[in-house]
Length: 94
Image 1: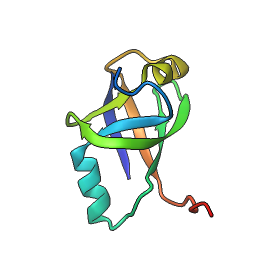
Image 2: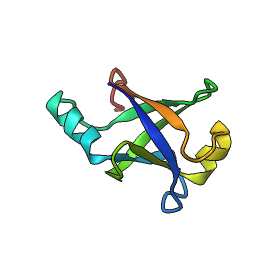
Image 3: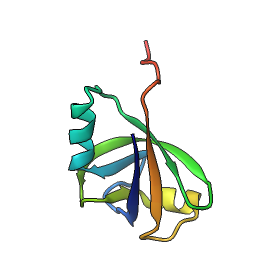
């Protein structure tokens, strides 16, 4: 699953590598019978990448909420389009 979502800074997510995704993403994951945990690769228009998990599915439609530190790491302005790719071949830890 690959999505293009508008980035938005979220001050409610301060630490960790978690993001907030829209509810329709969760619906797509459920339709495809994919179970948690969910990990995603974020990539910017300048080809910088980071790997995140999801904190919740409550952001506005077509929007990904990202912690401020991740904005700095990816060097992106607010409201830039970010590519979000589901990583579904990660083995679960033991």
